[in-house]
Amino acid sequence: MPTEILMPALSPTMEEGTLAKWLVKEGDTVSSGDLLAEIETDKATMEFEAVDEGTIGKILVDEGSEGVKVNTPIAVLLEDGESADDIGDTSAPSEPAPEAAKADAATEEAAPAATEKAAPPAPKAASGDRIFASPLARRIAADKGLDLSQIKGSGPHGRIVKADVESAKPSDKPAPAEKVASPAATPTPSGPSGDAIAAMYQGRDYEEVKLDGMRKTIAARLTEAKQTVPHFYLRRDIKLDALLKFRSQLNKQLEGRGVKLSVNDFIIKACALALQACPDANAVWAGDKVLRLRPSDVAVAVAIEGGLFTPVLKDAEMKSLSALSAEMKDLAARARDRKLAPEEYQGGSFAISNLGMFGIDNFDAVINPPHGAILAVGGGKKKPVVGDDGELTVATVMSVTLSVDHRVIDGALGAELLEQILQNLENPMVMLA
Image (tube, rainbow, N blue to C red; front, side, top):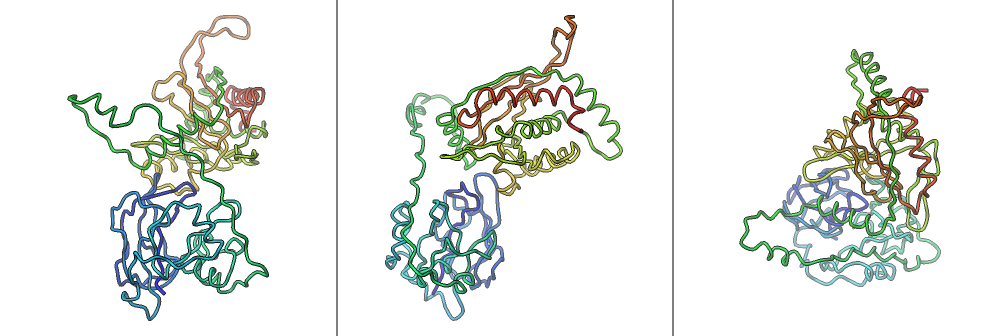
């Protein structure tokens, strides 16, 4: 039976994408692991691999098509002995699915009608997470009465393929219809519509800029963050003179290795160690619970054309300053080229946004859910300060603001975390101990 190839979800948050380029054509023979197409998500262009073997019988979505919903059929794969004549009319109604699949279908948005021999809709686990399985594997599982949530996938990224379901044994009792959590409510647009605003500027010279996937995602996530995350803000001034002197000495010694540490490298290390000193603050909000992380996975905002990425430096507390510097340079370069894999910019419990290099003295950053906090870093400025001996002196002072999710971190804990960051930066040698 012909098998539909569906638009993949290349990241947990992906809902639609652009089919940038086909790497195969109708009539080509493919095997599991072969590259089929390049898919543009809101963040990056990624390659899509085949999970079954067969022949490309028909391409349903043209190159360059935008807004293709996840699980939309994009091509048809033929097995041995099948021909394009077996594909039939793609507008024909599908056969009734098993009860569990019907329960899923009732919760999904209406999708294009499938062929008479199409695979059942993509199932979901009891937790509400989508199960990644090939269309052929889903169809065989439905025929055999198998619960896909109980099968371990051997395909790319854990995807369930034909061999996995053929070797699996039916359970003693049928899987109950799964309960799928209702999708989170989309923020209701407020204010006048786009057309109403455009009408206000009728007769004026302007350019309409189309929103790409990244800008739409940024708008949606930050609107959600400000509407749903109870932010509060903690501010401190940090004296940088000791750090600047120590950094200069280190850079001279590391010159032969081609290493040049930035102030931002020290900030990353200071935050990673502070999270270890305040483990209750190394946490994320998970809807009905808080997850406390053991490693310090620190995200750093990187501006790119048209938006930004927040690549994550994992286990940052364990890495040397030179290792953090090299990793950050690599992540930032690939972020600007939109070459990061989803696992490189998703996750983490804490973020840093540094606008000091742009001449900003201080600002309040918006928390990137599900993170518990984000540190907004301003530029270092020469300022008059009162020394420990009561004498007026001049110091290089950097203003920082910690934006905190009050559901995860209370005021006293947030203040303790910020104090630890301050102590690490004002006494930089302790970070090497």
